[in-house]
Length: 105
Image (cartoon, rainbow, N blue to C red; front, top):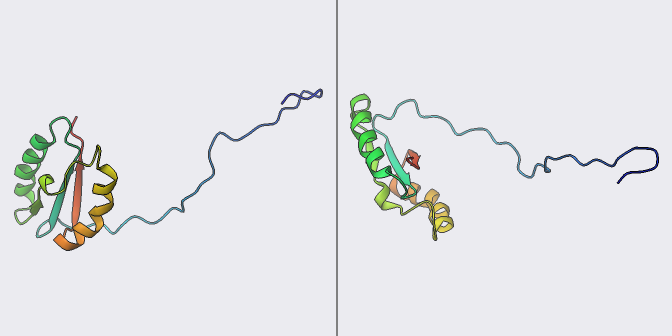
C-alpha cells in the first residue's frame, strides 16, 4: 500500500521454508553386484532407453542386476501417488540397491 510518505509495504517473493535440508543418501561405490530398479513414466521412449542402458552398463558392471520398469507401473498418471508411495517398501522387499528414473524425451 502506498502511503503519503512514498513508502511501500513489501513482501518477500520466496515462500517460507517448510522442509529442513537433509543430507544426501550415501552413494554406492559400484553398481557391480547391485540390484537396480528401473522407473518410467510410460511416456516417450523409456523402454528403448532402458534397453540401451542395460546393454551399455553391462559392459562396465557385468554383475549388475535389473528390476524392470514393468514391475512398478507408471510413475506418472492416475495412480502416480500410490505407485511412488509404495516404492520404499517394494524396494526393501526386492532388495533394490539403487534406482534409475527415466522420462526419456
